[in-house]
Image 1: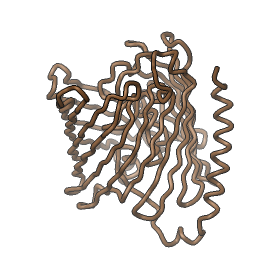
Image 2 (image 1 turned 135 degrees about the vertical axis):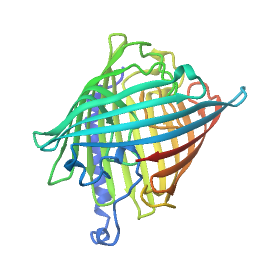
Image 3 (image 1 turned 135 degrees about the horizontal axis):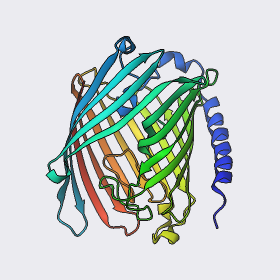
Length: 368
């Protein structure tokens, strides 16, 4: 029987903080004055950060996007085929109530060119957000992700919507960001984009609790520690996942990140042959980064990913999915203000049967 996941959380968390503190002490203090330490990848997680300072002066503000995605899969023993051809139109209205309270909404219309029966209208999120207890509280159908303030560490375990609540608190002295979330989400068993975790019920609400801390160890080094708890009446046991991430910025061009997660579930209990299904990890190197307001800016990344079925369930990735391991190479480019192109290539295998696969993904997106 495995050790209790909570004791693992304590031990590994202490080791991580100790090691990263030693690493941070080797950085020269005056380097912070020579380098602009802000990196902008301009992904969805940064939307609120780059919003206009005048946004709260308007009662109603509306943002949105138009996006087209295409994906082509090649699997060993099968002829390659286009698996995704999707147009998404999104509106994000925000009603500003005053005193920093607001109601946020996200509505998507998806047009699926692979299967027009899969066209959908989604009310993705609708929640009340405002200051409380020295932090920020969100109540309703919220957006939530692990390590939302990190770049490479963002969303390896979960990047989706919860019906519940989220509380974020930033300590003024240490700049540590603490986040907790409690709520329900729909079972990802049949999620066509992110694989199939067969131990999840086909149709059921999953109950989720998440705790995380994002810790700036220095001007160059960021560490994250998170705990995820998933349960359902259909699950044989409560799923618990411990996650640790580190990101180190060498200079204005290069950033290296590593994320590791482990589950308390045993692969043999779920009909899985490889114990790599019990862990998830990503090692990624980023070069430069896009700025949507600046044409001709670009960012490139190379990564190795192992996304075990028992350690991750709704990851943020567009080209690497649950139950797979392999290399990914990608780039983003700004053609004009707010107009982004993206292309990535995945070369890897299914974790459980080592069946080889490659995949191309492309995206064109305009934001307003």
